[in-house]
Image (cartoon, rainbow, N blue to C red; front, side, top):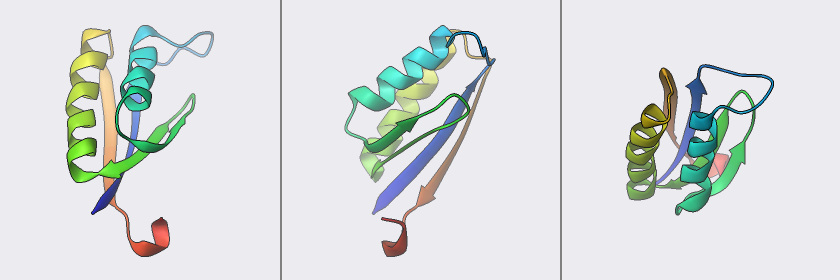
Length: 83
């Protein structure tokens, strides 16, 4: 099974990325996830169940430690048409 992770971290800073946003980028780009797309208002990545679950745990721990006051995330199961 393949999953898509979508997430944002807050608070936002439009002038420069806050530390928690940079940490979030490190987590998704440095792991086993695929189709990573990092943007100013949302981020997505795809992977197998174990990889996404591990990334979510690391994402929460590290971004909260880096100053995030809110982490919003959604995980969807990808069907054949979504790949």
